[in-house]
Length: 183
Length: 183
DNA sequence: GCCTCATTGGACCGATTGGTCTAGACAGGG
DNA sequence: CCCTGTCTAGACCAATCGGTCCAATGAGGC
Image 1 (spheres, rainbow over the protein chains, first blue to last red):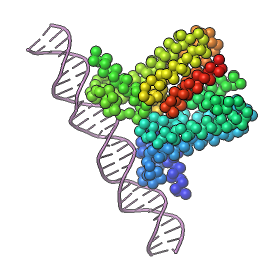
Image 2 (cartoon, rainbow over the protein chains, first blue to last red):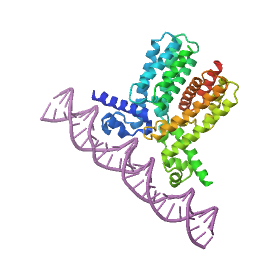
Image 3 (tube, chains in turn yellow, red, orange, green):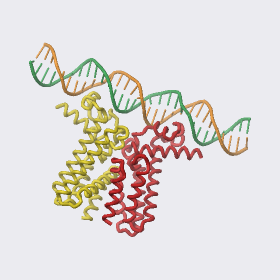
Image 4 (cartoon, chains in turn blue, cyan, green, orange):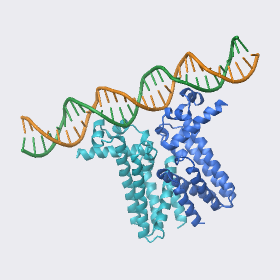
């Protein structure tokens, strides 16, 4: 119980902080303060230290995003409508907290030169997202589903970067507007 | 002479490293080793320390990208052709060095919570890029030039993030392919 | 009551961080 | 030849970094 609780607290705190300040911008002390736990707990649950925690946090956040993609597309009558709904869902998701968080993968990307194991994590999370979109594109009868999935992923990533820079959800809203126009 | 030389060396070394490992992923020692200069030189040319150096490096790299945008669009017969050529130019630019570098703005984005002055830098560099694209869009008679500029900027950013993650220029090539298809 | 084992609390470590400071190298003008 | 101002060289600093270690805690089975 307290096991899952503590581990979960650590993962959530780490995810929140990494997505705001990046892997190397956050110290263990800050994560532990945010989680309200001592250092011993961290190295009990994550013997691999900061790197293992970052891996877990990225995958956890990645699964959340994937769920948004899956559920939103699952309720869509067509690929185009799904893509539009995803933009709106992302705008909402990103506006939920006090700050607009960056893409979880982005947060660890620049740590790869120092922590090579995170490379696989990044690739796998991105892979699951495009696979998820591509599967729905195929299901909805969209021609060239993988190309369509790549195209949407690229636009979402671009809008996310700019939204993070501006600390505003409007890039997602503008992207939605654009998709609505090309519908 | 040696003034401009040293300052320039620092800016280039800092830009290269920041774009690979992010602002907080690079220590001053590493930058100084890469530049072949002692700490005294850094604080002579940049009394503001790491933050001022990062600001200068980001603006310097931002100007280089802007030049690519401006020249590529300047030689294009239409906005669509220009957008396509920019993708190819970015693919080439990103493949030039030993590693695929991240967008210079991206490198400082996650340092903003700790170094608030960098927020303006990020906004201004992004602003100049979209302004540059929008100006060419208007010149080439493209309707809704600002919307077109935003759309292209989003796609370039998205492709850049994925290219950085994969350490490969193919995302830019795929984006070019997509633009060629919608031409 | 006691034993066991998962978990916590936090002192402690060497290395590295960004930043300060000063001594001197060196060129150009007088 | 010396003076002046620019620039370099690097010792030094407190603070923080990620990581290690072990004693204390406390719930559950016996």
